[in-house]
Length: 88
Image 1 (cartoon, rainbow, N blue to C red):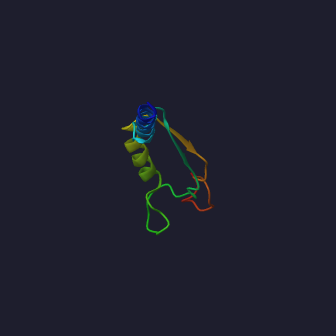
Image 2 (cartoon, rainbow, N blue to C red):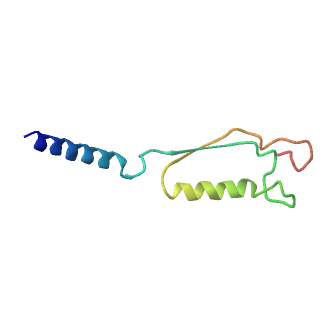
Image 3 (spheres, helix red, strand yellow):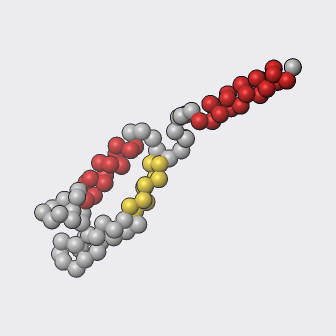
């Protein structure tokens, strides 16, 4: 009788572990994206520091929106600098 109880306990434990370790669907809900420190670079330009600016960021967000809801928060930095280029 003890062997049967142990076998049932082992089988139950195996099922519980299997159910909790298998990969399931992504949790429902929006994706939160936070950006900042744009440093005034609005468009891609000639310096290595610029890697796409607002246009690249917009494309990235559009791609994310194809897969679900997105909450986008910008921490600022777009309107910094003193040159005419930096002034918005």
